Length: 76
Image (cartoon, rainbow, N blue to C red; front, side, top):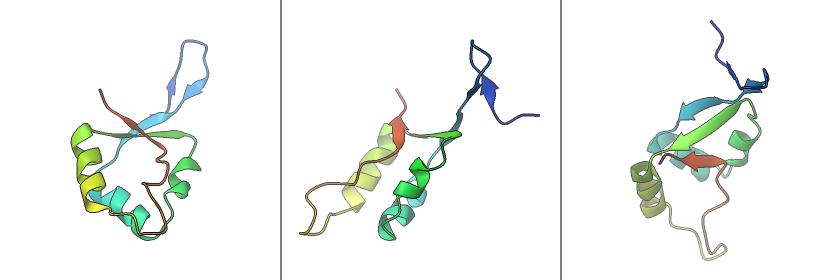
């Protein structure tokens, strides 16, 4: 069984991965959210609830004014 789905043009589409709060927080703690972006065969999806939890937990330091760019998609 393949973990990838084929889109209408026969090309492999990224596999959706539902991401939880602790996963994102752990990548933020080590400053390596960029590693998720390197996994191009996956599309990371978070619910609005998870996004709110991570945003309330993660307090950027005085050196940064916002959360790093997330390679994730919100579910709607």
